[in-house]
Length: 302
Image (cartoon, rainbow, N blue to C red; front, side, top):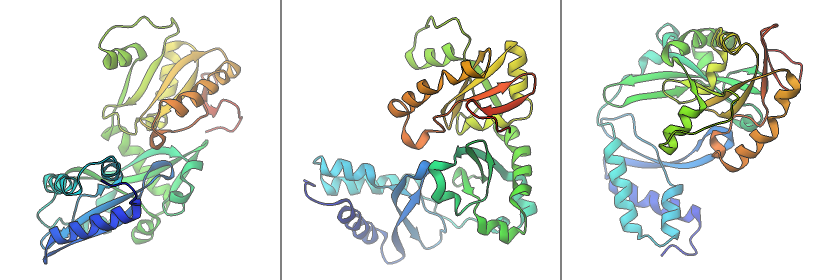
């Protein structure tokens, strides 16, 4: 039983157990990982001779299971199985990462909330967009690990001797190609989750994301996307940031109508969306005549 043990005591206990498992030719390390919206998780990794890469296994779930009565030994067996399933048993060559010409074609971007990520944004380059931040990552595809990514930090810009604007330009060019736009009716999404067709409000609502459905809210910035949607709906648009992974778009007559959706978005974020996946409590407005994207309650333009 794990009653009475603190989270810090639990993580230290796990570290000792996993360090013993790593043996003389390996070592276990415990480290903090900053996730989206300021969430910080404890991760454990095991590095062994002959490999410079290790999966990070987050310990919060294991702690919950422990304090709810699961046996520590069984938990460690589960943790070891997770590590063995995802481990990389050989050295990977990351030398390309020091050369910007080799990196630039792999860069992409995602949108996150600027205020909720103040700590992270002190360490990484970003571009302001409304109340959001465009941040960058390098896609890494390797047969040994599958697909992964490296978040671009300020130190990387110094190493590459480039500006955030240069990275932004290259990432903007790449992302639409890596992650093509996907638009489909809201009814289709709900049917996918419920398994049955639904009769929705007659106002047309569309989900905009990318084919991977991962950080798909970034499609907002794809060239011509909002203009095309406004033309198809013959209307101005309100954009509801349902999560970092997608946005919902529907026609409105004016900015004031768009503002009426803000309380709905705030309520859904507070009750239905995991905190780590929240993009914004504010809604956005696209004026089809001026072709300007703004926050519905402000007049600052993108």
